[in-house]
Each structure stands twice: as C-alpha cells, then as structure tokens.
Image 1 (cartoon, rainbow, N blue to C red):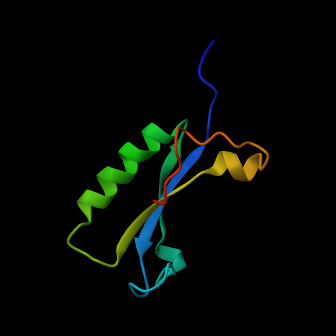
Image 2: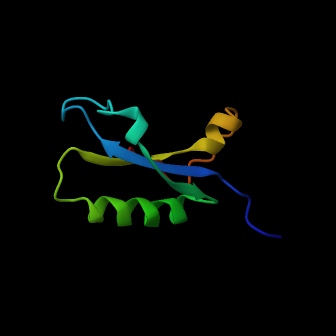
Length: 83
C-alpha cells in the first residue's frame, strides 16, 4: 500500500522587513511547488533557500496544506518544526 499523500506547499519571496513575516509584494510571491510529503517539500525548500542566501529578506516557507484540508489530521511527521 502506498504512503498516504500529505500535501505540502513551498512558497517564498522577499519580506518587507526582518521583524515579521509579511511579503513586500504579494504579486511576486513564488510558488515553488506542491509535494506529496514533508521530505520532498524540505528538499525543495532547502534548494530555494540556499539559492537566495545572499538576500537576507528572501524567505521560503513550507505550508502543511494537508492540515488545512483536514484540520482533524494530527499526523506530526515525527515532529513538526517551524520552517
């Protein structure tokens, strides 16, 4: 039986400032992709974060979309972390 799909989205863009999570221009937020599990999303997040490391205002985030689709799902991937 295949692993259950746990939809994760990776997005990112330039923040307005370093003190809060607010994008400078929502029209320029990058949709990196949709991934079937946390591990695949983390690979994509890491690649984009490393590619933009020279710009301190560029930030990428993993959205646990499966939790938005099914709020009662409390699968914690073996330990949930802020990303």
